[in-house]
Image 1 (cartoon, rainbow, N blue to C red):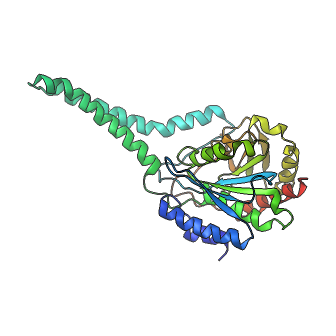
Image 2 (cartoon, rainbow, N blue to C red; image 1 turned 90 degrees about the vertical axis):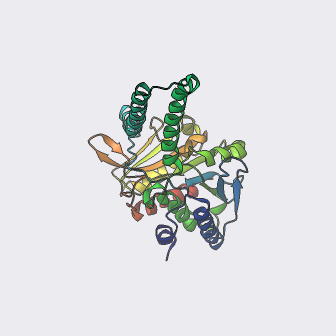
Image 3 (cartoon, rainbow, N blue to C red; image 1 turned 180 degrees about the horizontal axis):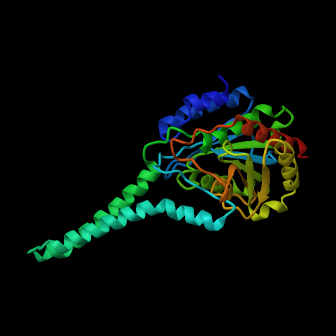
Length: 321
C-alpha cells in the first residue's frame, strides 16, 4: 500500500487529537523512510496546534506546505469562486443564510412567547427577556461550534488529503542533492481559522520572510490550476522560475494555469509575505469554482493532479540556485 492509498483508506479523518496522533505517527515513519528529519512545532496554549516541520527551514530556498487537519461535516458544501469576488461574497452569504433564518426564527417565536406570558413577579418579569436573549445567543453559539468542532467529515479526499499527498510526493521525488533546498510544513487547525499557520508564522516569520511559501489546498478536483499569490510574491527572486516550472509541468494536462494576486483564496498562504496558494478548480457558467468540500461528496481524488503538481515542484527546486 503506497502513501496515498494509506491516507485515503486509514488516515482520511484527521480531526480530533487521537486521529491526528495516528496520522503524525504514520507521517513520521514516512519522513524517516525518505531520509528527512522532522520536528513538531506545538503551541502550548489555546487549541495546542501541532505543525509538522520537515527539513531545515533556514537552509531551504522554498517552503512547501499543506494543512493536515480536516473539517466538521456540513449539511451543504462550501462553494468558492476565487476569481469572481462578487459571486464569492454572495456564496458565503448564501451559506450563512440558513443559520440566520434559524436564529431569526428562534428570536421571533421567543418574542411571541414573551408577549403572551403574564408574570406577576416584577423581578422575574424584568429578567425573563434577558433569559430568552441568553437562550437565543446559546443557539447561535451552538450552531457555530457545530460548524467548527462538530462530527468529523469522513470524506476529505480533496480537502485536504490531496494537499498532504502532494507534499509526500514532492519529498519522494526530490534527489539527495535537492533535499536541502526545500522544507515542508504540515499545518494544523487551518479549518478553525488558519490557527496553526499563524503560530508557525509567529515562531518562524522572520526566518521565512524572503522565501516562497507554496501552499497546496484542494488540488485533486479540477483541471484548472490557480496559484493565488500575495501582492509581494512577484518581487521574489524565484517567482519567475516558479511560474515557468509549474507552467511547464501543467501545460499538457490542464485546461489553464493562472498566477494572480487578485484571487480570493482563504488558506494558510495568507500568513506569509511570499505566500502562494495552489488549488484545482472546475469550470462552469459562473467561471472557475471549488465545490463539494466539507460534505460526503468530497471524494474526488485525481492522482494525475498530484503527480503533475509534484513534478512542477521538483522542477522548480531543480531550477533554484
